[in-house]
Length: 327
Image (cartoon, rainbow, N blue to C red):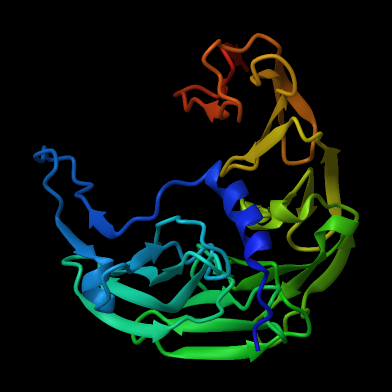
């Protein structure tokens, strides 16, 4: 049985999420990625949520954020010949997504290949586990579990876990799950398989943040051989052993973003004045600071910039941070 938040508590999470999310998509549109010129506003195909569910106010929801909170975030998981999305009815009073289903849409023409109940799914991994989408029950369902959805048929298989995951992500054939009490800096990460969730290792980490932090942005991600926990503090750990590589504490006036190649960009400041960051610095996979700038463009947003790296023909790899270039 699901333990639900009160409407007031859900509203707090929805308000926090509204800062960084966009209005829910009622239609999903796929456009061509070909290099051949295509007419603007000429999608390959489109489909409306109401058509699939047969209910007027149905919406699409990203499978990554699940059904627990009405975050109004559309999206899908790339499964090759399929795109897998979530669909359901927004409950404006309980701030949840009701009658939720995972839907497999043909990537070529948008036809529905399968529909499977996804009630009480707390979220899903963006990366496939073999030929399945890996999802998890979320921390507010009595008795945690993983859920596998076959990408060809949509068939669902639930596997009980000894704890309720806050998030679970896939790295190769390994499943990583984070669980515990974020507010008490009492979190644990487990590495294993769906049938043996702690087969590789289990580690406790002294890292945490406000309880809203666990439900607005992904709190754990994988970048090469680096795992990153991102709460009010950010921590990097070795994927093979679980050993902590680095930890950095951030104030409530700082934000962090880890790129696909494992570089973490920290935007610091923003508590005073116009709310813009006052400095930015970049950390490598071992937590070493290798670039910093205190001269940010005037158009820098409250949430800071984004690290970007050039890919030159030579051996050097300069990056751009703020309005400065670094080798």
